[in-house]
Length: 308
Image (cartoon, rainbow, N blue to C red; front, side):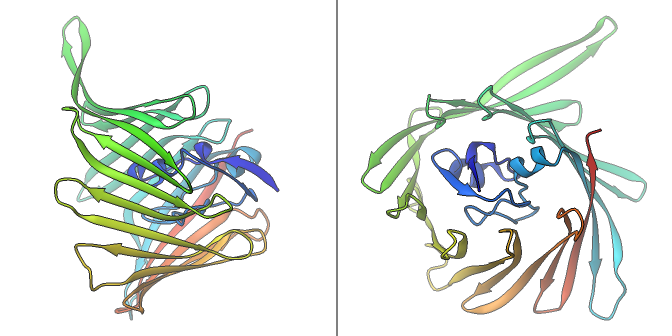
C-alpha cells in the first residue's frame, strides 16, 4: 500500500476534481485511474500520477471510435495526447479534431509549484492564451484563482505579450467538527458560492454540498464506500431537478482498478462504462461507453509511450 496525497492527482475538470483534492490524504494502491472521489471518468479518465511516475510513462495517446446499432465501428476525427513530466504530473493535454480539411486544436498546459500543486493552467486560443493562476495557503487550500488573457502582438521587430486580468476569485475556509466550509468570493469581494464538505469518522468525504448565493441553487453529492474504502456508489441531488434521482455505481478488480461504472436516472440504467486493461502491462487499453437507450457505443483506445 502507498500513501498518496491527492494534490498529486492531476485533473481534466478543474472545478470538480481540483476543489476536492486539497484537503486530505488516503492510503491507496497505485491504480491506473484515480477514483478516490468518484471522478475516475467523466469526459476522460483521470490517471493516477503515482502510477504514471512508477511506470515511467511519458505520453498517453487516445483514439476515439463510435459504433451505432447495426453498423460497424468507425474511427472519429478526434485524437488526444496527454504528456507527463518525470514526476508523473500531466503537463500537456492536446486534443486534435480534423474535419473537412480543417484542424481544430485544443491545447492546455499545466505548471506546478514545488509542492506539486497546480499553479497555472494555460489554454491556447488562436495566437493567445487563456490563463488560470492558482494561489494557496500553507496547507494547500486554494485562496485565490485569477483569470487572464495573454495577447500576443506581432510586429516587424518581433512580438510582445500583453497580460490582461479579467477577474479573480478568493476563498476562505471554516473548519467545524466533521465538516469544512469553503466560501468563494468574486472580484468585488461578494460571496457567491459555498462548498461544504462532510466527513465520517475515518475522515472520508461522505457529502459535498454546493450552494449558489444569488440563485439559491443547491447541488449535493453523497458518497458511499465499500469495505476496502473505495467509492462504491454516489447519489446526486440538484434543486433544479428535485424529482430526479441520479446515481452511479462502481466495481473494481483486485488491484483496486475501476472496472465498471453504471449511471442511473430514477433507478433506470442510462449508460455503462467498461474499463479494459492490458494483461501484460496492467495499463488501461480501452474504455467503452454504452448508451442503453439506443445501444450506441463510444470507444477510446489508448497507446502508451514510455521514457527511455
